[in-house]
Image (cartoon, rainbow, N blue to C red; front, side, top):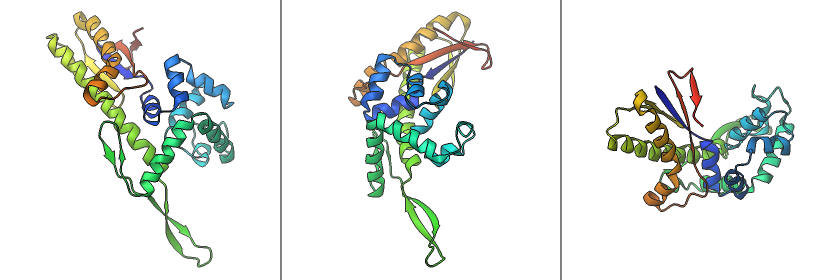
Length: 246
């Protein structure tokens, strides 16, 4: 059987942790339906739009980008509409907004962004050409690369979370002398080829591995994770026929 373990809301949870956003931390720890809550708070038409919007806004999309994105343009093609939603979003998640601002200051000063696990990124300012209307000439100007500076620490730290889960899971499978094979890691999920007689063991072990992430982060980096990073397990004969294990 094929077993897939998805890190639930990996990007959002990583951004909330790194930014220390208290509203996000409280929502996650209380088990709140974040997407429905934001649908109501920002007057979005559906929970799916709210969910998609959340994961795009982690990386600071602007009103123009939402207005011209087919996933959102059917809601509104007016950049000001989406800029207003963004303003409401960052008013709610003030910690995330403040974190983005701190990262932008590092980029402007030419300083690296450093993750809690020791990764670092030195991100250059974004260059573009702008016409000088007085001279009629194109000039190079520098912009803050908002998407890049918010993306790198989230994706890089998320990769460390998955690395710890992957190694921990594999160590437990080997210690049990199981025949299960870890076949791939893609972004926020792990996939394993599991004999039928090992299925219960692998499902329980995979769940426990993600439950143990706070303990392992404390052990490896002396980091106290303020939120859990759970794994959602699915089982099936192939990727088109997977069922979640409750």
